Image (cartoon, rainbow, N blue to C red; front, side, top):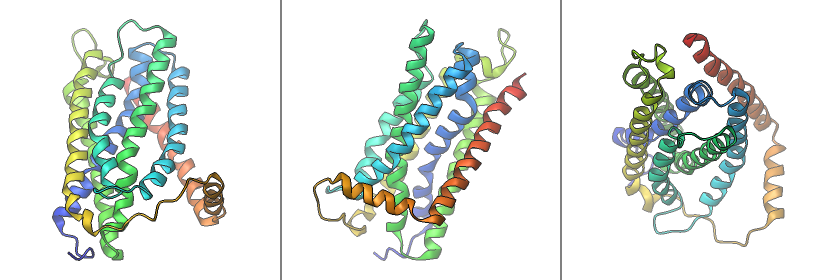
Length: 271
């Protein structure tokens, strides 16, 4: 099999996995703050603080997952074991994030949100990081890689938008008891079930759909003892790259702006 020859079917199943990431992003960016703040009554500053901590920890977890994945040895290759392992836990914990136990106090609810958000972010990264790395191994052709990236972005946005439409039009609708649909607490239960199922299916289909490529993917480097000094040197080398730093800075400020607009727009539109 020539890895430079990637058919439409492979592009579709490979890109389809990012539906899960899009659903997670949509939930975190648009619904999580207003749900825990306005529906459950947790102060907004505590909700924002929990989300921020989860994001910072995710920033350290992502490269660690990539590091382990790059060097992982198994009969399923170095990417697919993580992708398979993430599917069910990711769906379960995304459901739990939106269904905290009733009658939790402020402190307990804060810790529930914080721990759940951290776990969900790490589990989605457990799929997303190896899946993104898989792109470079599926083809060495520039145009094929560009096409694969386009499918990833397409399905990521489609997943986010469609899940948002489903949430607002099916589950978070105004009722006789609650005139503002986004404040309809029972609706979040139905939303969380639908979102969890779609996330599980998208990850599993994408992982299984690229499974037959495992024998043709690159082998991991030989095993070596973990060296903290070596890892520190590699990090310093990456941070010494000015174009890389420029890209990181651009991504930081653009993501911050988009996050503020997305989160606050929900409040503006609701009230």
